[in-house]
View 1 (tube, rainbow, N blue to C red):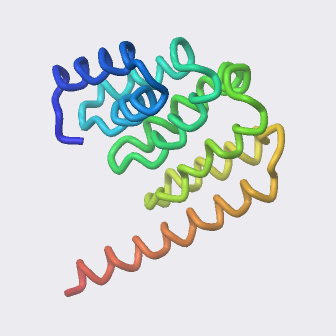
View 2 (cartoon, rainbow, N blue to C red):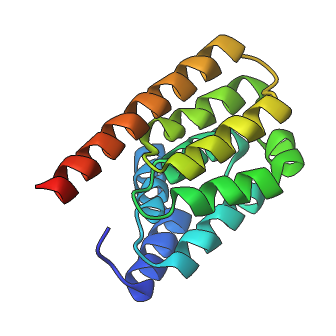
Length: 152
């Protein structure tokens, strides 16, 4: 989470050369935590090319919960929606949206709601509604906290 592009490249190499499933997932998920926008974007692209289909939705879920780059992750998913649906198992598409629970930006939250209403997941409408409800709870809490901080 504090590494630079060189650290990201090292972790990516370790992901590629991992000898067991636990290390593969550990390094893959660590790639999501990068503070470097270009590295984050590269990882998003990898989810549609080299990341195994059973892992892609969960990597994207983590990307949606990134504290700085959630918007980038959402933009990627929205612009690549057909490719995302072709890559991830249909049952995992709604699980991918679990990452939006961490969103605290009202504009991003509104964009997510608009997108998901226009682009339903193949299954799990109730689960998606729960994710979106939790997202709005966090958005409203963050807005209140920001107001309290600025009025103090």
